[in-house]
Length: 157
View 1 (spheres, rainbow, N blue to C red):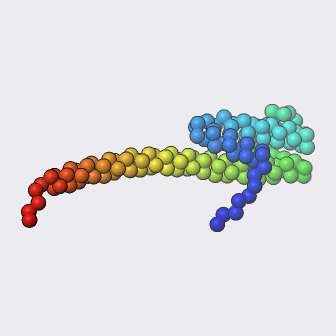
View 2: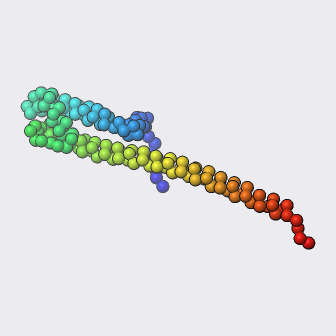
C-alpha cells in the first residue's frame, strides 16, 4: 500500500503544469527557462563571491551554465572558499536537477502513454461488449423464432 503524501498548492501547480507540458509535448521550453534561471542566479552569485576568477557577469554565467549541465570545461574555476562552496552547490543542484527532470519527464511520458493505452483498451472493450450484446440479441431472436415454429407445429398424441 502506498502512503499518500499531501501536496502543497505549489507542488500541485508544478505537477499539473508539467503533466500538461508533457501531454502537449512542450517540455523543452520549461527546461530551458528553469536552466537559464538557475544559471543566471548561480552566475550572479559566483561573480559576487569570487571577483578575481569571475570579473564579469558573462564569465559567471558561462561557468554556471557549463557547471549546471555537468560539463565543467575547467576554463573557469572558483579559487576561494566561498566560490568553491557556490561551485559545489551548483554541481549538486545541476546533477540533481538533471536526474529529477529525467525522472519527471520519463514518468510523465510513461503515464501519458499508459493513459492513452487504457483509454484505447476501454474503447476496444466497449466495442467488443456491444458486438457480444448484438450477437446475443441475434441468437435470442433466432431462438424465439425456433420456439415459435415449434409451438405452431401440431402435436402428436
